[in-house]
Image (tube, rainbow, N blue to C red; front, side, top):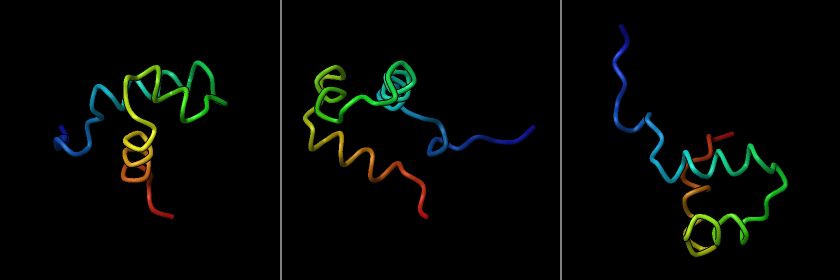
Length: 54
């Protein structure tokens, strides 16, 4: 069985963000931040550090 590192497991906040985007894929960042109880700047930081490199 493969081991799962703590870095590969999404946080609860990340899981909530994914669920919100699955509900409404056109959800604006400002609205998502409001729904999740985050500032838009904090949400932007989370998204930019969580996104896979291209």
